[in-house]
Length: 168
Length: 305
Image 1 (cartoon, helix red, strand yellow):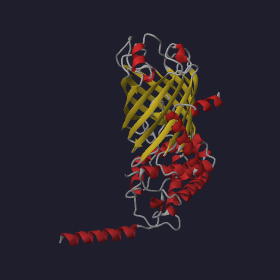
Image 2: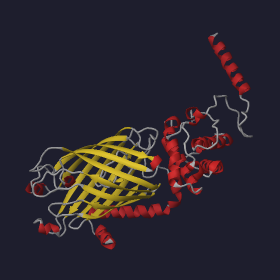
Image 3: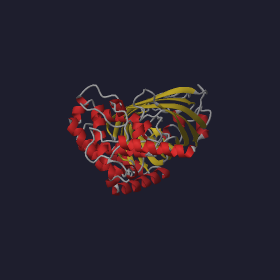
Image 4: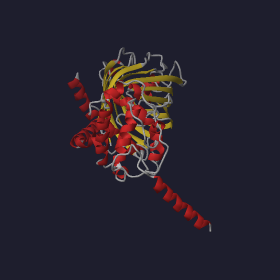
């Protein structure tokens, strides 16, 4: 009896979540549906920089967008990151990463993605993989001509996220 | 000076020569795979294991840092070889060794140091080219914090370590007033990387009885007890491959026959990639065994895998 109740409840939950998973207004065409969550800038995992100089050094929102596209392009062909990126919704990843970096650099962006712990849950990210992504980000920032000191201002914001991202 | 240094490296001790050869091979190998450096397998970021200090531990040139040597992240093992030479007015210092970094948690190191008195040996009554040799076995355990990732708090990375040292000249050490030819140093190191400011800071407190790091033995006629010494390093990351900075290391003054001074250096550590880094420094080692103002060029090469 308990089993049947559990199964019914489970089926109900699945149905409910599927029914509610409408594309959010900020989603781009091609994004896969995702279970609802509370949207808040706090999900970005870092307080934004107060001064605008670093955001400018990145070339503003356009510069950030190019850098994140380059980062994702590098990472999907990186043998170290294959396992992580293969099953990922890259349309959504590009959008939320751009929002997150733009927000953290103090740019005029809202972050609509999930928090770092839930978005990396069960991905099994290792420290080495976390660092590989940082190296690809450094490569993308180098290619975009972002000065080293400005790069480190961003990395200083991202580094503490390791605790929520890395699981093993 | 540079060609003289190169000649001295090549004509150095046999272990040193072997290390130089191994390093040369590694250089040739890594040059062939330089294109792969953007997707290096090893899991830590450039320079986050420090370079090889003169006692073999990961650190700066003169002081061990709390960072675990080599590029093995959690779940990985990293290793490196180093060869170091310091050309001083009246002596030549050489060191070669190997170090392992396990899981970015535990570091094990071995270094063989040679302190070649050259022509000074004759003037000290030891004989031309008299050389002190010392084996240094080191262990270091990271106990707290993470210098790289803890960017949202002041807490540094802290490690505890020990260095077991054995000098091969007990007779000479006894003759100059030294008490032992073997000794153990214990230290606590705290390292903080302030990415916001592209800065690296380290402070190390060492309990030691070593005279000139143990090259002139342990304990002495003036003082035979352990004393606490401080070693400070500060560096600026100019880019992800290049760290420039300064170090200061206080030392005991246990021997009556000669004054012992603190050590100081200005260094530049350059990581070509995760397989190869080069450290060049201007080192001021002060007075050594009555010969004053031992200042000169320090050059170290580290090959990792």
